[in-house]
Structures are given as structure tokens and as C-alpha cells.
Image 1 (cartoon, rainbow, N blue to C red):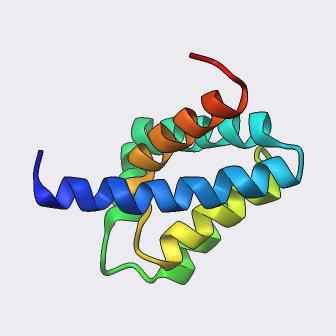
Image 2: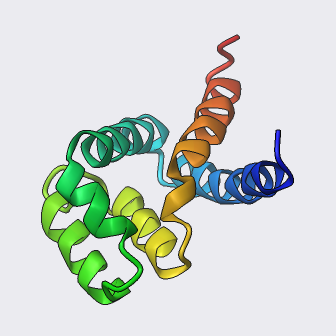
Length: 113
């Protein structure tokens, strides 16, 4: 494991902890978890979207507008706001690890081994 990987894991854990707290507070942890899976799979399976979101030349506002148009109908506001925050902070590249950390926190919350 590279030092950069460890850093990404630590950052992802902080993001996922904040997200699970917000989701539990709103009584929506299951919905947020499903939303994250949906968003992650959509990005992974759509090459054009993935290239668009990874492109450093494209402004974050354009990425955010696109994400909102694509996901606002299908996802909860908490999930969408979270993805927007990742884009704003230049952290969309760690969404896989955030999802892993969120899944662990979600399983702990649901007492799933």
C-alpha cells in the first residue's frame, strides 16, 4: 500500500463518518447507501461521464451542474449534496474508498458483521 493510498483512506473515512452521521440524523442511512452505490456504478459504467468528471480542465461548476441534472431525480438531497461537496473539494477520485468506508460504518450502525 502506498502512502498516498493511506492518506486517501484517512480522508475517505472522515468524509464517510460525516455522511453516515448526517444520514442517520435524517433517518436515511439506507437511502444514502443505495444512492452512493448507484452514483458510483453510474460513473464507473459510463466512460464519457467518468472522463468528463476526471478532466481537470472542466470547471467544477460544470461538473456540478451535470451531476445535479443526472442524479437529482434519483437520489436524496443528502447524497447529491455530498457528491457536490466531493467535486468542490477535488475529492471525487476517492469515491470508491468513501463508499467502502461508508459501507463499514453502515454495517456497524445496522449491527451487520
